[in-house]
Image (cartoon, rainbow, N blue to C red; front, side, top):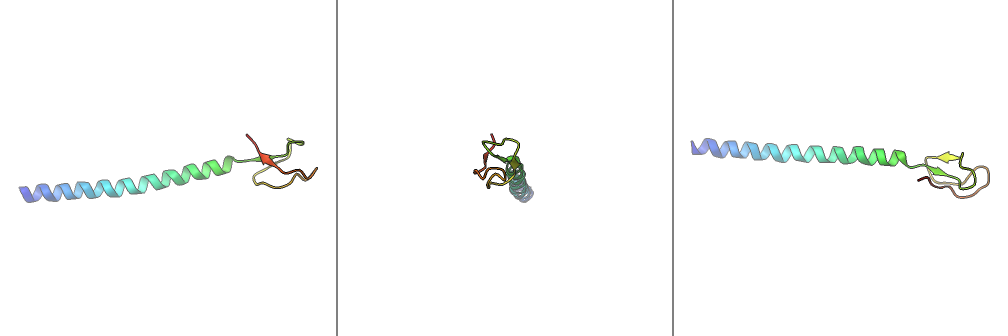
Length: 68
């Protein structure tokens, strides 16, 4: 009886350790991917110019700033 309780406790503890490790990392990756996709850059003088990466405005050459 005591041997069965020890084995049962070990199996439960192992299951908790493995299940908690896998779920957190996948949620963090999904959140990071969504946050990166939302960042857009625009020209202060030409708001119609929108880009997904920083750079210069093709119309006036000003630096693109992060759109809020």
